[in-house]
Image (cartoon, rainbow, N blue to C red):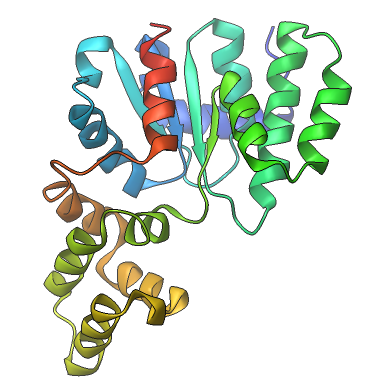
Length: 229
């Protein structure tokens, strides 16, 4: 029996209804927060030489950060999974710790309470990432789009933004950021992405990511499931 609260059971029932039980028929699942990741993860996998469909791996968006019922469900069914989640001003630390508490409890991990408390308290981020990845939990430094633009995807992202049909003022803003990344305003940048629509933006960006190194936390989440299916 899967130990779900009423709200969690309702969330899961709605998800399985909407997706036609995609999780049930997958050999492995990568859980993500939204449409942007859902569109981009298969393309990132392709850059790693991995075709997710051939492995029977589904990318499933939970439309937010409420991963708990899905983690309980997949763990109980023994379906390999990983979770990719935003850091969200350190809320990601608590989120990762809570998910590992659920997973560790179901797996009857020894000394789990002490480990979870360490995850909640630590500021040793390399160790934190390494330990959470053992459980299939992968966090980034910021939201996906901000992480990408501050990484190797700057050129691809600005080219995608320019397709947004923005006026002179916002196009000048994009030009300024591209000329000097230290001037990038996070709030204004995300507002432009939202105006295009995160899903549409991700679809367009997906055509421009070939040949660029996959962010390590995304590569880790993909490989974690590939290794277990």
